[in-house]
Image (cartoon, rainbow, N blue to C red; front, side, top):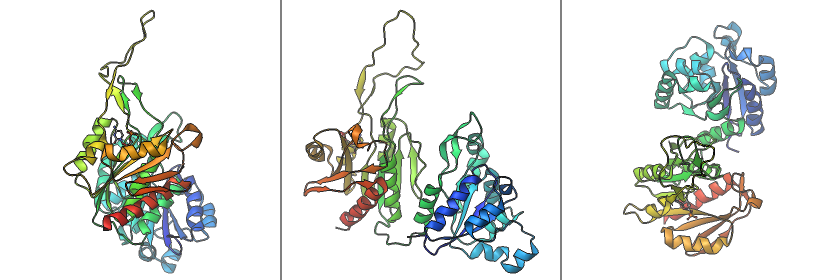
Length: 402
Ligand code: C5P
């Protein structure tokens, strides 16, 4: 219970995602945190201070020049009397103010005055998120040690708008807050880790591709768990719709060859965990233009060629990490296939799972794995993917100690 007893100053700024902050308050309080809410003028157009105050069971701060509030708490105390400042949603406007040190309302003033960790959950239209000005501001803020969770890809509240800009879900924000505030042991401090995650997309032509059902959940959770133990993590992710894990450097790629290049560029490392469902084959020569369908013409055939095996490359590399871990997604004879993979790929451990459709593992939230090493096989129970990640990270920390 990392959040138990923690005091969170929740800044709600003015975006439609503010409705999710109501649920966020509940989730934080369920975990034992106290939530002191601060709302911008814009936020009050979307949710009422009455609802926010009722859920937080605290006074809602809104006004920089409130004589009463300044007498009772004051904006400097507001900025300091907490363990974490959480901004959800964080609008483009508020991020811009923060990046430039403006302090013209209570939220921006508190953010300039605070010496506490700050976690922002941006939410805005995809064009606003992609705008060079917002990108610049986010870069500046990262340099100022502001941490971010999300935004995610998906549907926007506005009709017919989709892209990156949705606020992370309340539970993802809670997980990021927990990771930021966790003061547990850091056995992987000073260690470097590389993790691959998600599927790859292998183009057929500019609009079509070959892919698979990997969601990236397991790989992303492992990257996050290693970071929680203090590792310096590079996550190389194929196209996924889940947010970048907190506290991790993420390189986004599409194809297997790009994934390999990004992994090799991240060497040296102490541990590599290759979780991505890399396509075994790609189209030998992807078309430059969209392949057209012409009536009466024969159906095109796709000639495939083999993709680089990233795990095998890393497992036999001159800069091979001390610990190389692969995954084996199988639908039959899981153990034997995993054992054979240990040697073939040059891995120390293969995490084997049965991805038969009936198991619901591929794309699902739970996993049942066997840890296959030269020394033997260990069956783990059915666990949430986050729990598999936590255990695996602990196991990695143990092994790297030796
Ligand atoms: O041979 P198979 O695809 O079953 O091996 C699975 C393991 O190898 C996973 O760890 C996966 O990330 C890795 N792999 C890879 N590059 C490939 C194929 C698989 O890194 N081209």
